[in-house]
Image (cartoon, rainbow, N blue to C red):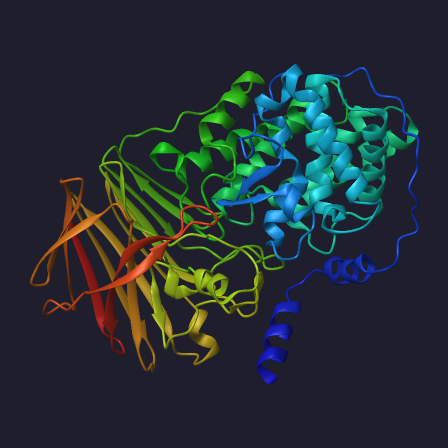
Length: 546
């Protein structure tokens, strides 16, 4: 009882007043009625340029989202036995912007499905009428019509009612990427339709955009929720808006949006690996957002200048987002030395303070374990926990107090950050306060030090503790050979590194523990986690030669 009260208090105290007021407003009855007419359409059309959506269905009946396949004719549109995130994906209608469903022979099938959705999802009822899926659906229906000119009068009327329903109550109780997507949908609708009411929605969307642009996209280019996946989605949003507004909407903040895109694509490159894999910090999975190549190609198509990312030996401290990236052709290290996310919006945050990922010779070696699901399950909580990340866990507790599916109470704050670089070598040190909720003297400090072809990661926990454990999650493609306390890391027979651990005086035992890695939603892959037990004030150093 008291535990739940404490979690609620330490969660709510960080919220903005608009979120609290918005939550009450969100549950109030709506005074909005369905209409059977819709405004005239503008003459604007965009038949090419948007990023094509990935195929999730071949027949508009069997759908695969989040690595799970269901048959619409069997489960219906809003079956509670199917996860809400899967149902959200169904209601987004991303799949109609797969190029296959823009061909003339497929148009009647798409129209039939749209009408089926309208018949089975009456005005204001069910998951499909929540503001976030409404927003995605508005955008996708408009994009599809611009390509095919095929929405029927019935679909147009439904689309207009969805716009009105969204405009009546954007997600101010959630803010973040939800509110931004609401704004994007309203702007799309304002460009698509003509008339005074359409212009009202356009201005409503632009007002949100102008307020949220600098709030959500930081000075170093990152999206403020600090998830590479949501960042990539945010880049697509900005590119879409730039595409439809640059010549159509005089008051659109074109220069500001262009700069956010340019900086944001640089940040995404720093937080990505080869083959478009994303660094797994906070809620992040591959295969959801457009790839970096797709985003950069779209940006170039729109005439935006992009900065090149050098591959010489270099290091970058991304101060606004709190990440350190050191990379060369053969080496890439990404370390989290920042806050877990915006204080009032940590829903996609993990307890991953001072975690890191490492790639050698273009191959991922150490990882955070990723995200395979949302919801309220124990597995969701485990994947957000400190124990699922390449960092140190103290007393079996989380560094930030993650709970429920998208909640954080007390959270870790970084402190005493130091960074020194000489050529390709560097020393990075940082501590955090996450365990001071148990005792004010408990501090975890981690030091990464690269010298030539060697990297050491030193951990020390100060203060009175019962136990601590350092974890290093291996990418599942890595194989190991062990000789006493020394490990050899390989991939497909290619030598990547040797490693051992010490306490400053002698080698210490490294345990191999079976675990799982989650590169995509709905996917769990067996892997190995290396674990080292730590005592109070004991110094543990993991040494790699590569």
